[in-house]
Length: 150
Image 1 (cartoon, rainbow, N blue to C red):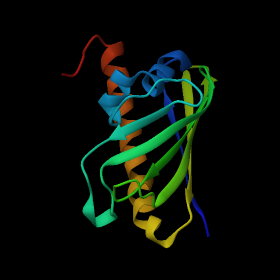
Image 2: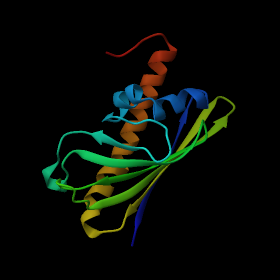
Image 3: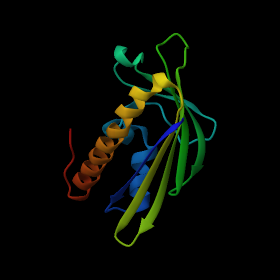
Image 4: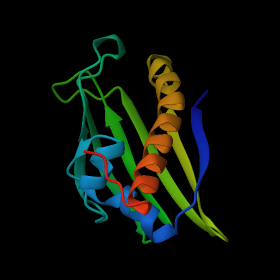
């Protein structure tokens, strides 16, 4: 059975501002990971973090931009493995932004956790994404109030 992560988070900021944190590499790095992302359909890019041997993960997520609708929707593949080109997790991340009266509702769907060996990744990301939302919210609020984190 394929597991899917679904979260939503409200940001008290306009969709255009939230979009910047989903699409600008220097802002993405502050709340997510080092990356070479550009919002260009078909572009291959990577997220990089430290290796996690217990998850058979070399620290690199291999991604491809699948869809870009500015300020509304962004999706990309999200693949990883133990290294040397071997992929054991083949998943997709979809972001949807919905403007609200006093901000933006952000929806995340991360699907493709079909294999038994992906369950630990699923569990980690299920909670990890929530932590990332909170980090993004802190960054957005700091900028709004004239503070920036180093």
